Image 1 (cartoon, rainbow, N blue to C red):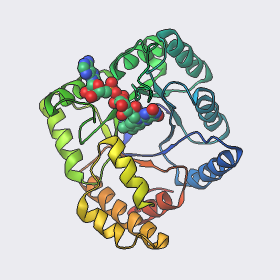
Image 2 (image 1 turned 180 degrees about the vertical axis):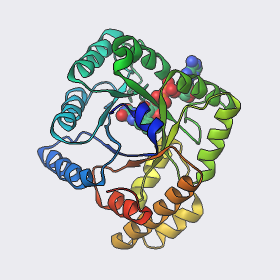
Image 3 (image 1 turned 135 degrees about the horizontal axis):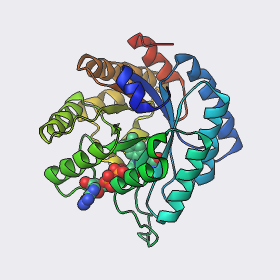
Length: 287
Ligand code: FAD
């Protein structure tokens, strides 16, 4: 059973996200990280995709490598921006033929220069539909959710309306990282009011570098709450203390989410294993 929809139906999931490294050293580091996290027995692991296709081959290679050489179930991220429909059919067909069963269907961000003339699928929901067309029952298809709204959404109501429609077409969602459990729980309530009960797995990013998280938060539209920022900035000069506080605050967030009955936990690892392993141990999760 390696489709994420089946795993979610069977119980709570735990999953880890990685990005395709650019260098040989990065590749070696990712291999080490995968080896260190495999004993935690994650339900699945995911590999991001560079919008526009910048990691097209690398994402494919790492996903298939995980499928063939480890005991872990991979999920491939795929973005539609700056790709033609034919490009996307080709990429999805290759995954299907390689036996990859899980796809995270995303729009991706437009290129910095704004030029995305080849984009044929305008919204992620169209990629969900294309994945169904190419894969049929072979794929379990997930989508992204933004508890604090997508940064380009003009208002809350339209954000939630499009998110509910996308989740209804998909098998599951995974959220952008956030720091307040209330933001996730409010989103789930709003989706329920719209008749959408597709499972949405919260994404958790343990803070290991304050400035980096502030940058990420700015880009993703997630708030880094000022009380939390203050606690981190007070120990900013001591990397060990920042990491320890990061593990502590992420553990607290995860525990609140678990108490609220979330369908799973998805960890943004940034290709490192230590914080994720410590949080797993604190929570008494499998492994
Ligand atoms: P969409 O669902 O298309 O939404 C984008 C915007 O369009 C929203 O404002 C939405 O409200 C609006 N919208 C949707 N449908 C309609 C409609 N029919 N009419 C009008 N407006 C509409 N990026 C990468 O490049 N690579 C990755 O691997 C990657 N992985 C990610 C993983 C997760 C878990 C998350 C949360 C995000 C990830 N991203 C990744 C970032 C993502 O690509 C960006 O947030 C992107 O800007 C939006 O993608 P989306 O799939 O949410 O788009």
